[in-house]
Length: 230
Image (cartoon, rainbow, N blue to C red):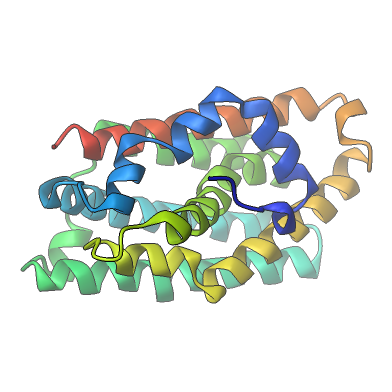
């Protein structure tokens, strides 16, 4: 099943197409299909959820770094709103689900990071530290926009009795989808400001594609980390 992610912006569409099979491996990973049909073992989901909470701590820091790297007030506003959405909505989902399983917020915050988590989060932070706002957005986009795509995809095909409906509804929901639209639009405007309107002709474009594809590959590794607990 294909979903319309056209509202996520022009750059995302081009990056997504350039990622090719890497992107398909991300959005159609067995972990993702297991969320949809309910076959994903609970142990795998909880292991992923704990690690994803730790990931979101660093991901929020990366979006906070985007505020520092921003060149316009609008870039600062979107980055700030995204930090708020991560902390107020996504992390709250993790806390509530894990609490029902006897995993406290303190236990989440103190969890040891898996190698897949370390590799991904530090790559994104390094992209932002060593590069500029465009580098950081290319590294951040697969997560924030990819989860929006996956949420929409699963919402249309998920089994009615899947135990992961709460997770699916969070990312398919209007609040998260609006975040994706805002981020996608902001990325387009930010790139036009830095590399020009003709993305493909910009000397920096191949490097930004490389950033996006690398982050996508690390997303696949993150799913695999959870799947390996099955």
